[in-house]
Image (cartoon, rainbow, N blue to C red):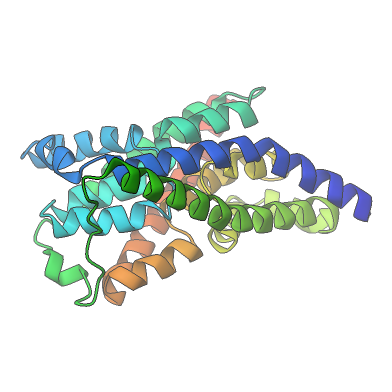
Length: 297
């Protein structure tokens, strides 16, 4: 049994490793070399268009769910409306090109999951942006002791050093959680009683809830979570797998603690609830649409 466990774990880890490296490099480049002021100027004043543009910023912003939190804090401090910043927060780790590429690689034989992840992720990010009250001010959410934005000097060597340091730190920080997630998924594949899993498959509510709790607790980076989600195909409903793929990148246990370091507890709890409820509805909707259309993934 241990041999099977080790082979399943090693397969998941080696498949996801290149995307860990690419994601760490892109994330570090964005944080060090891209100015938030450029983002501020590109946002329309109209709320609906502003949230839509924020989703597209998230699409071209290859930052994982941990690296996006300090960026989100800096954007709020620099005057970006909270509903716009939240939209970027939830969309960037979910629908950026690196995440979609890794999802494509993981689900090569079932591309429906790639399309559903992008479409549903885009829709839920847009919806969350619209649901955040425009009356909320940064003083309502930011902790007084929240860290100030880091200032980089003009020295290219210093910036490059910061880029390398951040890339290395993020890679090793992400890798330990990916290893934990891969081990957990391997455990469920090899050790967990099949009849218990089959009991979850028969219930939309239980299967979606289980996958959401699983991705929240394991806190696997969005750049590689598709490889873990793929291992549950055939055991859980498509809606449960989609909820796994959309919920985890938006908020997880590790990400929640990062939020609490910058923002007030009441705001963080409300955000977690809003994201969880939205993604549960996404999973349920996917199951309904596939059942009505007679489509199987």
